[in-house]
Length: 470
Image: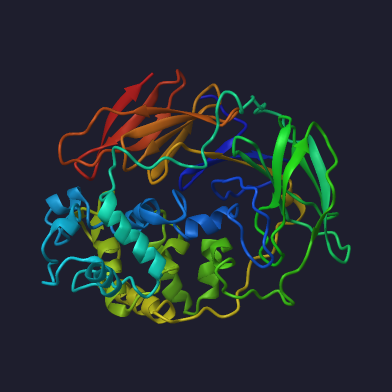
């Protein structure tokens, strides 16, 4: 494979292709959903993608379709056909409302099912301490109407909108400057460094740059058109958004004036701030000893999923114990196979005790600290983010070919795909079906010097088998 001038990072179901300027390092957020709604003072609008992910809104904002996302993250890992076939005590939930009674003996209706979700049972965590009433209502609606999640037909991504008509090619190489430019400053006139300024194209591709020490920012060359201009991670500032911004070449944009939202650098643990925290900021803001946090990092957050996905939950000690046991003692994509524990019993107990102390029901985070904004060489970076056609696919590996395309695998569905980063258009491929009772999905992926894609298909819930495609 030829060495590319881009780096690819996969974040949930979006790709972020990072073009590095001199001395720059990059990080990425996730998908977009353009909107014409005005910014409300003190609120996070639906273009704050981290807010949408945090609130399970990636497929819909309410109803059964949103309930499917909640089911995927909170229920599917136990209540799936593959785990049940391996002897899990969790029953399948398909057609649950056609049954006469639950395993508890209660009659099946909306109220009893909702209470089961809230209170749990001997082998089920109690989710009522952090799932809100509307979350449970959407989950119950999904159990009524659509259950259960189908790996062969994952939901469409409503934010994917790249087409041949709205996605002209953008050069991959050497395109770091020469586009729209402007200045970011505070209401007092002070230049603001390290602010993430973002333009969202008609095809939903996001391009983000950072302001330098003089508050100046400059985008790469972008296709002409009507864009949305916004601040990608406002945190201490009021949200900022301007719709229908005409972009044509190196146009000078009006100054961005940011109003401070809080009187101090400490932020409240409010519903719009928490989703914007990085995983390490979550960990930083929680009490606990260095040993407790390091044990947690080594056993719970080391490569499988983000800290935020764990630490946003609030559970009692019994429920944390069930969660941690399953994560540390099972393997395979849906945690099917009983395997050797990741850590020892003392480490497991330490993690459960720490989590049940710092993230118990009703515990409140204190005022939050966030890391300083980038400065100096760290601001010389361009981040480009792309959508994938589907959500809830557990995208796993990425690999580039000699033409600059980015290939990705899907850990829980039979879909893999190729992203053309010049246009944002994704071409999907469906891999051959797996044997009955085996979870579909692909794992490791590489592209060789002849652009042959070598992809590992999940085996019997554990290892991989190899296959190749031209």
